[in-house]
Amino acid sequence: MNKQTNFDLVLFGATGDLAMRKLIPNLYQAHAAGLLNPEGRILGVSRSKLDTAGFLRQIESDAKVHIKKNFSEEMWNSFLKRIQYLTVDVTHRADFDKLAELVKARKNTENVIVYLSTAPTFFTQACANLAAVGLNGKNVRVVLEKPLGTDLKSSQKINADVAEHFEESQVYRIDHYLGKESLQNLIPLRFANVFFEPVWNKDFIKSVQITIAEQLGVEERAEFYDATGALRDMVQNHMLQMLCFVAMERPKSLAGDDMRDAKMKVLKALKPLSPADIDVNVIRAQYTAAEGHAGYLEEHNVPADSRTETYVAIKAEIENERWQGVPFYLRTGKRLAAKTAEIVLNFREDLDDLFPNTPNRLIVNMQPRETVSTCVFIKEPGSSMNAMPVEMVIDLAHAVEGRRAEAYELLLREVIDGRLSRFNRRDELEAAWEWVMPIMEHWAKSPVAPHQYAAGSWGPQAARDLLAKDNNAWLEDQ
Image 1 (cartoon, rainbow, N blue to C red):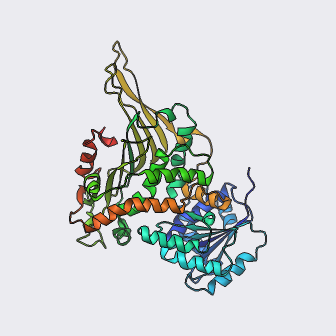
Image 2: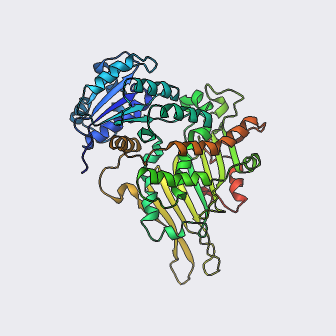
């Protein structure tokens, strides 16, 4: 086992929803699995007027309930001994003197991780104040939660402000999809299996589908969601990362910058979308009332004239030798028929008539199950030589013995150990923004209202028509 790094993890926004629902429970899981240095410390920081005892009481009530496995009171109590609390207001420079004093008092700390689980509007001031008290040395890493800006300009501003105080190698931009084992598994699946890589190109693949579907509506997040929409919330980050993993060339190595260089080449090869392209190849829609669910415009805190999209489907193209002419269909939405995140590779049909209508298919499912399945054809039983489809399934959760960590746990451990490959680099993030900005700008000017789809369906008819034009169909219609 690798040497475990002795760390201080300074968690800003420690009393917030993300910390209580994800970060602290996942740190507990790493602790319970023996994957954290025994002396590593978690320092909760927020502007709430608490002491350590009060913070631990809040963790007991708000974080403990989210630990669904590997729990024991004895292990929980040992985990709580790692935790201290300090009241710090990000906007108060003097509060950072107390923070620096507490952190620097530990002489055996190897790395300091500052996790900014706050609104992005506070990133600039937090980094400036950290630097002012010397908490930006080479052993300090800063973690930035998404969303990193609301458009290209705001993202560039945040990145530039952070870069005044931290080197790029110190900045870890979180996208929790990059912590999903099933997405990371695409790299060995493609490059460690000799039978996949030779057919992973335009000569054999007819189309690629990437779907992130949610059954829930906007729930209590309507105010946030109406200012964000599906394009910003899902496409600009999670979906383009999934596309990169499918489409990237073989990286030079598995090291951080080599992996990120390979993804960057894909983003740069994405065909820019003109206004005419957007009108034809991008669908935006809102859910309407059905199956006992309210429509989007009827949700609490949603303006009656809102044009915010709860669904988006895009036909994208990658202009390089490997993928020229292959459509990549991206879709995401709320109040859809099922909760799923998956990648579907549809292979071309055999052009001769020996076994007609036998297209192969590969599906990488990330939720609700983590599986890799392929549609292959075998002989029907009996005297005929007719081909019939069967699914060959690898259940990733049961393929190997042992515990499978959730995405946030893996990412937290990667930060502590200083591995960058599962985090977004600045140029990569900004390239993603550059690609979606024409859509955002065109929609802002367009008088055309979003399409509608019934809650509980798979989205608007226009999204099915988008694929039908190319003689393709979404997975559920195949």
